[in-house]
Image (cartoon, rainbow, N blue to C red; front, side):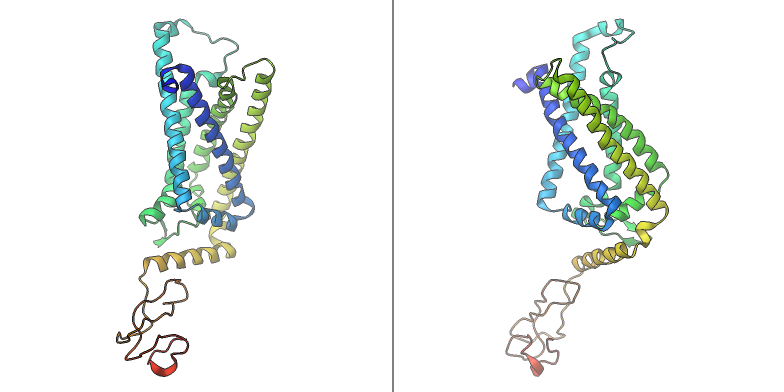
Length: 304
């Protein structure tokens, strides 16, 4: 197949997956920005992007893009080394027109990949994966609902080394994206004296804005975590309680409001206020009609 048998085809795959990943990184920066100005809305977004089918499909798609991008990057590097053979050692000084990031794209990519693994452990594993496996993170022995995104920000950025690693990785991401942005257009055929300088300028601005947003967010999250704002904010704590009530309801079987099981018809009253489930256990004693608001005193435990 042309996409795998030729170097141009492999570079095109790299370019296409790179475009998708640049768009995702941009979206991620904007989504994280919500946490700065409206933390409770950030938690709502986390709840929306939980273990729902569309979020799972998106996660699988992103994982596939990363894997394909990495495999093709390694493949191209190996092919280039084989093609050059020992001649690559004859050059001790890089040409003036070759960027530093161009010669170190693989190393920069490995740094970004290592950072991604840390980021997944700090957030994805405690949120979407925890929602799937029901293996929830905890603070002081209290389980944390996966929707509580700001609590995970507190857990991550209260560690002194988190912002340090993030900023180092984000600098590597800037170099990687800055070169990759215009390079993917070059692969697609936009390699001319008019558009290439423009694309390099656009790429530099784009990556600087996106990475700059990430660095600002890392600093703000660290300040907020160190001051315990995510733990003490009344609006957020109320939101955490709602999330934890939903978590407890999902983990606890529906309780019957009727103590005995001798009624022919089921009790249609919800089991409690925190749970939306309906209690399917029979009503009390020998009631021959449904247990509802009209049941009145026919049962010893009438519905209200």
